[in-house]
Image 1 (spheres, rainbow, N blue to C red):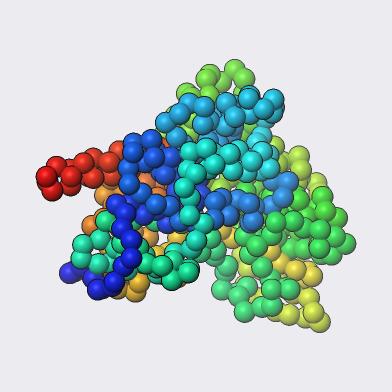
Image 2: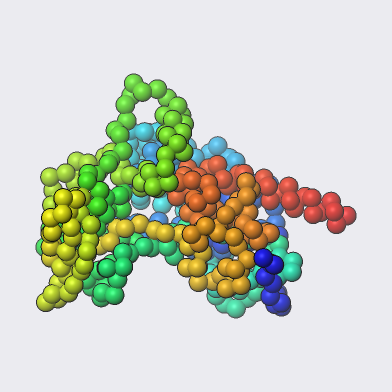
Length: 394
């Protein structure tokens, strides 16, 4: 397929443009800055984490695996906590969301101070390079673009739960706190980390919670064993197990609830496990969900509200700023781009980090562990590419 180009008049140039300022975008920017690269990064810093993760949540990743990435050893979460007298342990103390967000804000100020919080509203391919339009109308030309967009655009809700008022059905992405459900009947759909967090925190807020899922049981992470060897050995074993698994298993492994959530949930919510939703309907201002069990039995649960903690499906088509011609130029599988070993798409100069890269690089791209490996790798590649261009131009 021939590459797609659009002629646009642009105002400013840079070598590398990063779209997205979550863990992947900030980590890549920190490595590029350390390498002296010419880049710009656009987006609100850690917006999904600050605005869409449940207040009071504990990270499911262990402390040692909850870092943003920069060449400076002092950039690690452990070092940051130590300098401030904040309790930390590589494996035995879950990381509170509030601590992680404070750490990430410090990381951005320290290693990526030139972050541009404006949003990219349009991205189109040119010859050569790309043209970006920002939310104030400014246009910028970049030789390379990195999509580090996170999960914001990729919420997935089963079709049978779509079309209802937000007062009746919503995705877990839109819930920061659960106080408004106090005294109300809440049905949470799903058995992954998001579902368990929502169910537990809503229960603590005073809601009457039921949990429904296709899974026959909730698979929590294994509690840490102090006699099981070093955390690095366990981490390597875990990664090896993930990559030996089938695609569906790897996705489930990436969303497994933390071990510390078991006591927050078990015995405190009604669990309807092994059920597949058939239909949902509104009844007198409430919502009734009918499902079929693994043995063919039928169940109807009526609630004041349903939270679909049903995950995310990365899909290039759902990026509102991406020019339609670029969609045709990028080779994909199930609308996730196929990437080279350097995380480059089939459209030369367009790279991908984070969840959109999971199809090619595995489930670690859905959490922060992927940033620690992918960000320095891509930064080194882009620095080499820029150096080669300078030598050729000379």
